[in-house]
Picture 1 (cartoon, rainbow, N blue to C red):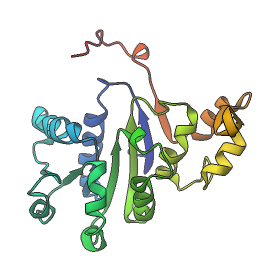
Picture 2 (cartoon, rainbow, N blue to C red):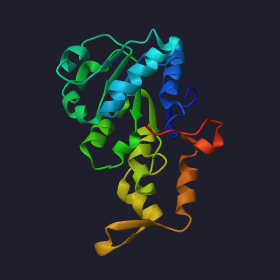
Picture 3 (spheres, helix red, strand yellow):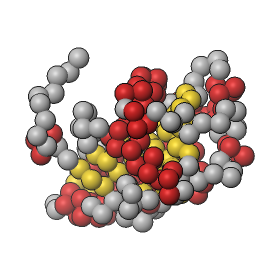
Length: 222
């Protein structure tokens, strides 16, 4: 993350994605490479995970975080903070405030659980696409990058590179790596060898690790 302004961490739960981002951000603040963090995260993650990680680790205690959700979100938007967290459903409200919000700072965008942006035709994806130029750095985080197959990767990688690796349009991506099947050809299956070609295309911008690659205790789901 320090050496790649645009990067994806595809790591299972419990491997410290949030802490990794916060540690990276504190270093980027010191070098003035980025001084503000704009995080888009599911509502429970926004309220429970990000504030808790800051409270848990003493080296993040200087960071001020605000959650742009609920009745006080208009007021909180005016606060001077290091980290602003919003849920994907709040982006429509935020789009009316975006014109001057990002001015005068160096911003890093964090998409926590980027598979929520797997639909390249969704309104939330189109809004992020329109704002991409205001961010100096972009990071996507998820443990399930392709919940319904590799076709879900296109829009997530686009957030990082504006189409450099998998193409600027979803149709071209499908035609290059998939073939139509099923009723009326609305389902798509991978061409032979296409999975490896996709992996090779995004290898320089994404880090993927499984729990089996790291010495950790057994995961307990609560």
